[in-house]
Image (cartoon, rainbow, N blue to C red; front, side, top):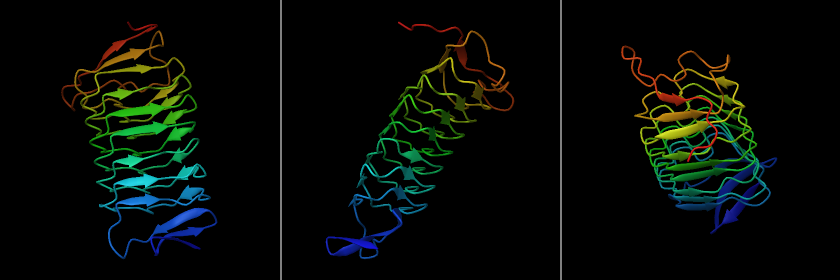
Length: 226
């Protein structure tokens, strides 16, 4: 089934899944996905380097693996309420500046890795897991709220986020992977836990290289930062 827009069959949809974005008549800068689409399929918009803006309907509940990977000029996209973001979904979207993830359970592996212009991320309280390398290489990221319901942070999740100077890890986080803040510069981590939980990797806070073993400054028992 195809949906016509501007006399071009841009969208191919099968059982609610957008499987292909047909821009073979020429590069498309803006795309409005039709109502009723429930998922963006894997690699659907992969490497569409002229695409700047995408509008997703509220019906979309899943953005598949590598769906928008390599859309280097993508600046604006709405992530619908309750939509899950899978691995590499927005990896290397070099001009994406902000993200608001509402009522999703997890942020996939490498979902926003190498989004070099990404400055702020808002996560809802329902997010339980940030997978490995999720925001790795987001060199302009300076603000992200970790929700109170978060339970797991994967390895290198915020690696090389060189602009990120502080972050609060909620008390409910049971598992933190290796070198979560690898390559971060002068970051201060405020932990609501009184001490390192058993499920956190021994090198979770290592920011330096193989020989330096530099660790980030950590404040335990954080209650209320002025």
